Each structure stands twice: as structure tokens, then as C-alpha cells.
Length: 440
Image (cartoon, rainbow, N blue to C red; front, side, top):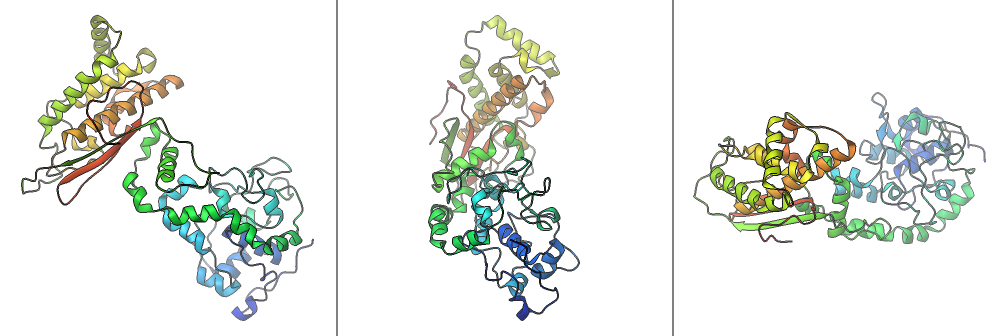
């Protein structure tokens, strides 16, 4: 099919409704990316035409913008030009509900598509879900490469190379989905909207059930990027998203059995006055040091199991003398233990910065919370060192000493009633003895 004749630019809003293909408005669950590409193809627009005619920007053109989070689109201006509501209400709801978590769930760098759907000039924003590998409509594999030349599929962005030549591979010039466009197939899909609604019903219900407040209590938006040093941050977050809002079967992650979660909820004694939080150390540093010593004594038999006292002293002596530690020369259990002991066991107590996200009550941290913190620090370092061993890398001692908080996930808060509650999440270590009873 040849491209329809493009309309002249600069018409008023009444004439805008005479765009070629205006009747081909966005379908249910269709991405803004797909709808704009179809509009560009039907009217032989290039990117500049699309900006001028559909977005109304004249000076600051939104080059190279993310299509997964299209907040930059001037919805009212686009509606005046086309009568189309883009982004759709559901696409906006996804962006609002998932917020910063959006990029943990959706891939926004490269187009992921169903070849059969694209031959019908259709692409759903649900296809960009990282965990979705098959089209819910046609049950075929979703692709990320050109079906002709095998090159990477177009960027999922508002770029010249995408919209100047819609539906064509930027490398070989053929349709990247491996077949000619068929407007008749698009009309068939448009006449069978119930099929689209049925295919994505579970995804829509999941979105409606998802409560961002519940996830925020498990996983704060301002989490530290350094957690990725020891764990699959996206995978853990996906695990908890599925816990609080059951995901469709096609994208639900496998249950995680490699995580340990320690929870606490304890009433703190309010002495009636608050202490400034900018003090160098916590008021109960003596109690915290006692907790550290109890923790070390409790796990030490497990750490140095089958190691003689003489060998243990040799390992500790070598640790103290070295400025750089080669994980290949240590058992990860031994090195993680020594790092925790020598980093935190100072005469003036732990610094505030090392407690990460731990909130306190009147400048005090409950022993149970600090003990949970120590477990997460030890486990994070242990898994970090195992990774260094596999990669045959050398660990800088001072790096591991002074950023130990980067290897744990500490989520805690203090209520107005003086109850300190929270949880810590860390990778499981088989056989690690747990000192106290924690909630699940």
C-alpha cells in the first residue's frame, strides 16, 4: 500500500480533524509510541511535522524523549490537533502509580514488539514489561531485533530515526517486523476490540489492585543504588510487588527463596526531650557496642568452624597487617566477619552514617534493630566478597570498611506513640545462626 498524501501544515483546529487516518484513533492499551507512528505513516509526516502539528512546540522540540514516560507531551494541544487523547488514561495511571519504580518494570530503551501486531499497526505499552516475553494476543514471542537483518529494533524514544521513517529498520531499510504493513489487518483488529480487552484484562486488574503505599512501606523510593553491589535490586522489588499485588501469570516472578527478612516492633521509652540528630554518635553507643560484641561471639563458632585457634589467630593477624585484601586468600565467611568487627568496634562507637536508613527515638536505637542491622551488614559483605572471588578482583579494605551500609536494606521508622518498627532484608546465608527471634 502506498503512503497517503500528507495534508498541508498550518491548518486550524477544525481542519485538523481531516487528517488522513484520523478515524484510526488509539486502540485499547495501545502505546503513545504506536499511535504517533501510525499517524506519521498515514500522513507522510517526519518528526518535525509531528512536533509542529501534533504537539505544537515551535522552539524547544522534545528530541530524543522517552516514550515510556511521555509526560512531555502537551495533551491538550495534541487533542486539539487530532482529537486523540494521548497518553491514554491507563498509560498515565501506570506512570503515576509506579512512579520511580516504572523503570524497574518496563524496558524503555529498545522497542519490544509482536510482529503480528505491528503488521496491524499496533503496539501495546504492556509489551515493554521486562518480564513479558510472549504476546498476550497472539501468543508468539516478543522481538527486540529486526526480522530482516537481525539488528536491534528501533529505540523506544521520540527520535528522528524512528518517526522520519516509521516502521522501517534504520539499518536495512525494510519493515523491521518482517512483513508489509496491512491496513486491512488494522481494520480487523479495530473491529475486534473485545479481543484486546480480553488479552490485557489481567494486566489492567493488576494495575487497579496495585497500591504504591503498600510497596513504599516495604521499599522506599530513595533506595541506595549501591544495593546492586550485592543483590538483584529489580528482582527483589518485583518479588515484593507480586507479594502485595498478584501479577498476571505471564509476568509473575518465581518466588524468592534466597532472602532473609528480619522484622521488629518495639516500644521505646520516651525521656521527654529530643536530642539533635546531628550529633556524631548515638546516645546509647555503649549498648550498641555490647550488642556488636554479643553478635560477633554468637556467629564466631559458625564462621570459624573446623578452624583451629592457631589458624584463626593467623588469619586475624594477616588481616590487620594488610592494606588491601584479596578475597582469593580468604574464606568469605572469615573476611566478612573481620571487616564487620574491625570496622564497627571503635572506642567511641559507630557513627550515625553507618546506620543507613535506621531512624531513632530520642537518639537511641533499640538493640534488636541494631542486631538486625549487623546481620544484614555481614550478609551483604559476605555475598559481595563471594562475587569478588568469582570475578577474581581485589577488594580495597578501606572501601569495604567505610561504606558497609551500602550492602544492606534497612527500612525502619518511629511512630508518634514511640514504637520503633522496621525490617531488614538481606541475602540468605545457609546455616547462619540467628541470635534473636524476629517477626517474618
